[in-house]
Amino acid sequence: NAGVTQTPKFQVLKTGQSMTLQCAQDMNHEYMSWYRQDPGMGLRLIHYSVGAGITDQGEVPNGYNVSRSTTEDFPLRLLSAAPSQTSVYFCASSYSGSQPQHFGDGTRLSIL
Amino acid sequence: QKEVEQDPGPLSVPEGAIVSLNCTYSNSAFQYFMWYRQYSRKGPELLMYTYSSGNKEDGRFTAQVDKSSKYISLFIRDSQPSDSATYLCAMSGGGGTSYGKLTFGQGTILTVHP
Image 1 (cartoon, helix red, strand yellow):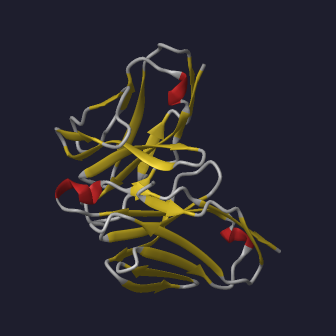
Image 2 (image 1 turned 30 degrees about the vertical axis):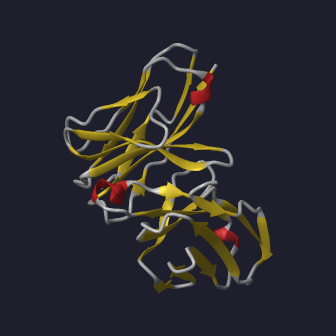
């Protein structure tokens, strides 16, 4: 049981490039979420999903896109990277909305 | 004003001390309250999970929720150097899919020195 797996662990992009952050879980969890963590800001919700085919926006969705075609995977796409998107990105999952979320170890993203 | 407020510290205590970490919040719809521990360059790890008001104990850790005051606490007894980490409070609730949306405090950096 690997839990929540995020790839890559580190990435450096140039402004304007696009990329996809991968997140996979093997716990058959319905709920999956993406957060970003910035110094002094805690974690802020970007997008979340309550099941395959269902996604919704969180607190800071601009510049990010998601889709959920399977229960296991929830990729996060940066459409046109900006320096303000330099952050640590965490993916999380839970069995239901009333159960605690389990986190991956993050992707550290720098945009030059 | 942030929906969840947490003193960022840093907090430095000697080994064996009792540590008190706190968060206040403004959204009365929150029903689920969590404490996560985060070591450097790792993801948040769930420590405590409580529903509504009351206390919950797990080993050296005790979580308290006072919904009337919109205040939650985490106590660590007999603190150890291995407890040195960032502690994050988180909460959710409000009906429908809001249950799956966590709102975090800023995190408190704790150092326990031998």
